[in-house]
Image (cartoon, rainbow, N blue to C red; front, side, top):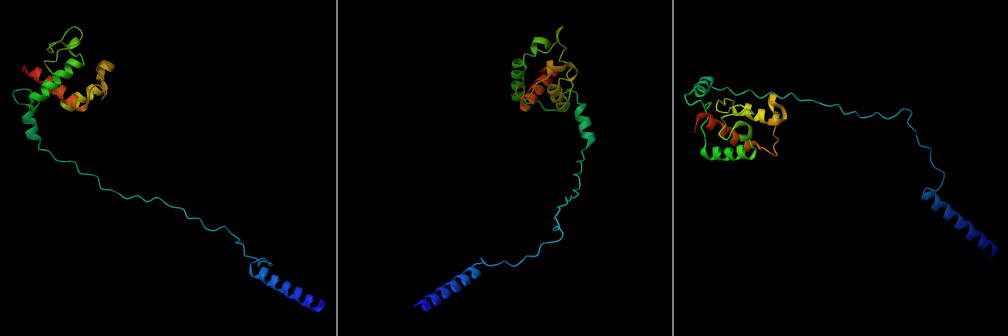
Length: 162
């Protein structure tokens, strides 16, 4: 019986040794270690040249003729609806306190009857205050872009005597 036990124990040890070796529990094979670090991938930015947009060509003679028309309105057709809205902006911003109720001017502000700015120059002036500083500086929360256009239309209308 002892020999069967010995044989069974020996068989059992062999099976366990095979299982351990099959599962990787045995001595591991040495792995090769790299002798130098692997190369790194460095992304290089690439730039594409985009052809600039060509400036539009305008017929300068028609603009000059419109600016020199007899009405003095810088070639701009006045819209009565926008003029009315501009008057509302004039009153809301209390422009009349310095420039007079009809833009005739007071000792506090000059007359607006000789108003001759372009719309772009006027909006720039109202955003920056120009040389007058913050007295005439209106951000878009007090004078929106459409409000600026409306006020411009109103000032043109009083400059024309409408």
